Image (cartoon, rainbow, N blue to C red; front, side):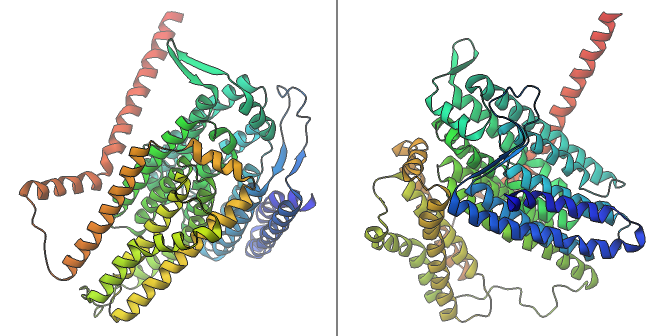
Length: 566
């Protein structure tokens, strides 16, 4: 219990150490404050072990049986999901805080900045270990306010505008989130997680927002909660705030992209028993996630700024994560969340070094580096083609009897195969871009990469899923609720296969100087599509005009009300 309470409190202690005292000892206190955050990480590891061996732990400063109208519902509920997230957040927070000590050393507001990092880590840790939905929402709100403050350089006009835009867009999702909480309490009479899930599973309540239109209660609640998660995790069309937030210091963007942005994945997993009841909400999440993944990855390809490129990469990955939730693969979404958080924190912290080096060395990349692609031999192409298409399927079929995976009995297993296939294809296609490497080395690297990806995903299927969701019937029910119509599922697999094969053929022909004939209108369409992507599908100006129209309407309404009052 002591370790659990210490995990969120220690970063707050670090913030107090930084902010207290005079300016002459600022640097020393900043270094000392790194120790409490590191100790929080160690306490999180202890918490993970205790929860994994002894079960969930609850700690409340209120009585859940009493009315919560006049009660501040402060408490912790730590299960395996919360413990895993606490380890991730405290670990990344330790790295980012330590990095920030020297990175912001010459900034006059370093004390405020480091203290805010500590407070943000504290809020994140409390959020993932909240005992009830109301406490989670309050911390969710605090996180939105902290995002506004964390941009740091409020004297810069563009930075201030981006912070205000972020704050405004997040309010839209927060309103929906609050509506979902109010509806859940009115339908189920509780906001305590275990009790809420138990009541919702037995409830037959419905909601009728309009005459003749009726929703299942769980569908209405989860749709509102999904909108709240969409805004915080930059899902389409709420994604526009994330690229503009890159004016913040690099460590802040690292913390944002590695921790805060994962809010939707955590929220859906925390409410998984409720989301698992509603097939409608899971299908909506699948559509939104897929659209965000495709648009984010597409917009990333046309960026010429390293931080913008990483920002749109995060949007695509968050879409990927929500899509996995929409397919019922909740544990895979958490696995993706952890991998992306570690990767993106490292990349953002390193991109600051790359930017600094580019400013110091105008000739970067150095003259003499090869800029032309070296054509790879048919051996490289054949290895990539065969390994991408056949080996993942053969490995899963060969291990079907050992791992007892019902490959032909559920869409869920095919989903894991699909992600193994797509991920290995991306990795292998990247390897074909290597320059000045002998073809047998590239072929060997492809095989090793593929085996690594397959092993990791099989680990996610068996070990990580069993760790987060020990009840196999519960996991099966999530996949069952998320099942798509058979014709649509088959169509997706066929189209994905054809696109992958077409990509390999195009790559081979381009590497050997060949072209594919296409009618002139195709080239014109490509140019128009490139312009559309370059302008981010014009979502920004549309939202800007909608905001101005709404503001104008509110002003007119206010003026009309004042005139009536007079």
